[in-house]
Each structure stands twice: as structure tokens, then as C-alpha cells.
Length: 124
Image (cartoon, rainbow, N blue to C red; front, side, top):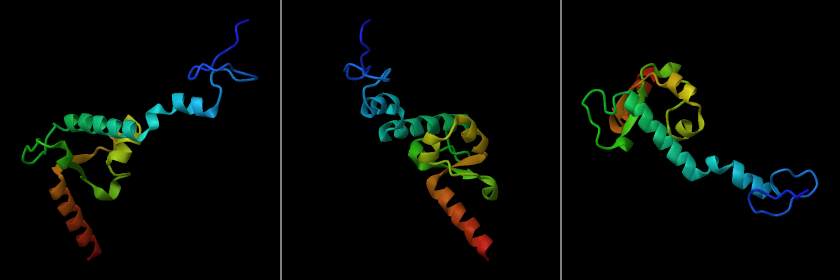
């Protein structure tokens, strides 16, 4: 019988090893989608998908030149479960993102001003 070889480094496997010769080889094969660059790319891809679902532009004035300048403003801030930021976009399931996307697309400046205004009103 031909000896089994590691699918990453091609070393001969020993004992109960079935695919990988070490934890390093296993991590190299199974964790490639969790690297920082992969997460950034996934977040950008999902942001663009969500923006297209919302029309691909700011809903009040139609601004669409720079997607980095667009942000989501929750219609009901007291019922939001999480922020729609890069971390959430890259690490949460599509179903969770779609369920949370009860918002309006605004430019970042206006979204920040609205949040400050709403926060200052709730503390009065």
C-alpha cells in the first residue's frame, strides 16, 4: 500500500494522520478565508452587494461616486442588532446582514450628524 502524503507539503504521514502532517499545514489549508485581506475583500464585496440592493446611491440626493463615503443609517436606531461595518459585513452570515439591513443609505457625514442629533435628543 502506498504511504499517505500531506496535501500541503507532501511529507509522509504517520500514525492517525489522514490529510495533514502538522497543525501548521492544516491551518494553511483550512483558514485561508479568515486572513485579514480575505476579510477586507469579503466586506467590500458584501457592502457593494447591499448597496446595489438599496439602489447603489444615497437615497436623498443620488450621490454614488465614492462607495466609501456611503453608510447605513438605521431607520429605528433603538432596534438595531449590530452596526453594518466592515467587521460585521465580513464575519456575519448573509441572512443576518439582510435581516439587519433595515436602513437608509446616507453619506457618512450626514449619517454621523443624524446619530449625534438623535443621541443628544435622547439624553435631554
